[in-house]
Length: 377
Image: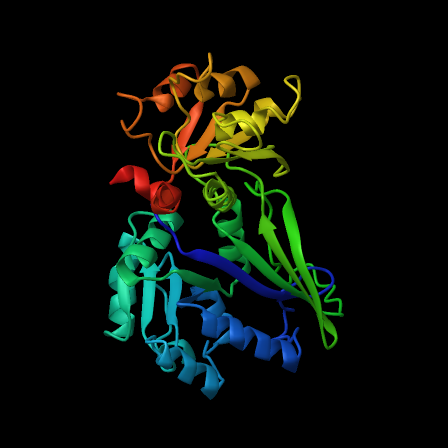
């Protein structure tokens, strides 16, 4: 499954509220920040909000700058991003601004909500049923594969942000902190109660914009099951980029690897033929930088651009065995090892046969193969 890059965007009060409970929308941002949001919108292929936000705020969700719209058109894109909403019930107001401004519109709903949504909108938007329940992974896959969306901006509300964060599907959070307190326990909040797959995020930027502060965060904690998280995708991309650092070889693949603790801390990284060892493998190089008794290893994930080897001539123990000996029980990789050098290679079988979990993200296969093109014909 391939997903767009998912960027969550919100402005909150000092006590974490998106709005108050009054009849008018509470403005939490500043003119300069509204322009920044307009720039982010212009960079997106699609903008998504929940149906509750349409009812509460009646937004237009436009790129307001004529120059930015013109730049999009010059790039071969529509002037406005695709506008997307999500509703479980299909309860939509056909008179809302959302439907009568901007470009194309798309509704994701349940099987039971689809008929109601289609009847209400009368062809104003495409309606896509996702099944008996709202399936966010199916939604993101459809946006990526059927609508060509590579960058998705999510502007709310709190329920939508909460669901995406709980499932580890957000690649970035852009949060603006406004210098005011709402103080109303009934006011809507940015995030609801957990559990959250990405419990700790990494701060990548802070920026003062007039009287508000922009904070940008990225999730770093690996996934915990067979379904990949946004952090899994980020770390695997890092591993694939490390493969490009390998000295060229006609007799071995170029591979990158990263070892990441359960809390998202990077423990070690490595790549094939690193340093002065002409036969060292990426996973081997990374694990060698850690003590064998490191207590973080049993909960860690190894990200490798290529499936860990099951057999090798240059060392007594292949990488799959080294991973198992380290205590790591989760591996994320982009590409199953071909038979170029070892027939019937099956590192996945070795790992899973002894209780480890292997997650393959084929959308990164091309990136992993790029430094090995000369070996693949």
